[in-house]
Amino acid sequence: PPVMKLNPNTMKLSDNTLTVLKNFAGINNSILVKEGKRLRTISVAKNILAEAEIKEDFPKDFAIYDLNQFLNGLSLHQDPDLDFKEDSYVTIREGKRRVKYFFADPNVIISPPEKEINLPTQDVCFQLDSSTLEKLLKAAAVYQLPDLSAVGEAGVIKLVVRDKKNDTSNEFAIVVGETDKEFSFNFKVENIKIIPGAYDVVVSSKLLSEFKNTKYDLKYYIALEPDSTFN
Image 1 (cartoon, rainbow, N blue to C red):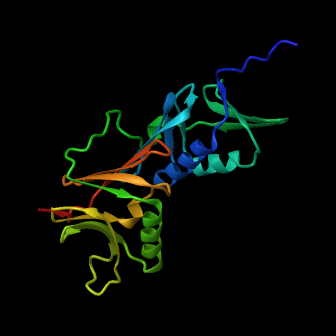
Image 2 (image 1 turned 90 degrees about the vertical axis):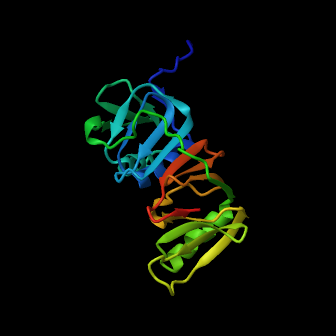
Image 3 (image 1 turned 180 degrees about the vertical axis):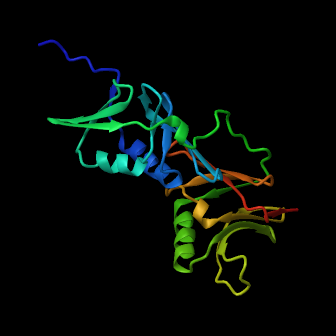
């Protein structure tokens, strides 16, 4: 029998890509996917931007208004094929089942600017391993602490979860590196919407940071709070 040629409009999504999309849905529940191998999203408040290089190659641009719903729909199948032949919807196929999932109007979606993001300066760098990240976020949840700070003092960099507004707040700190500088780079815990794992972190005193995860080929740019200090 003739070999069935795989339609270039048809693809499957790998577990890695589904993990990235699920994470992106927590940053912005709508997404504009561009043709090619790169996924990008930005939060509605524009203080978190994420981008990932993926294995799949999307055949066209398309917009999804409710990404969580789309992913939950995919999870009804074992191993679906996505067919992007039509302009207005994707067909999700498995065995005898067909789902038409309609795209959104890209103009209603807050999507990242075209131009590349670069950190204006690179003032402090440290490595964040997965257990440190997990412990900090867990402590923040247990003690209901809203702030995460990278603090440089007495020769070390500490990551601290705390409530900056409250002098008697519980604090949980882990040393992550050495420094000869003094600073307090402040984040909102709710903005640390990153996939669990190890990160290389670079912080700019111009209130922007980059969290880079090599396992997923993933980067997050996260804004700092304006009360951050750097001497």
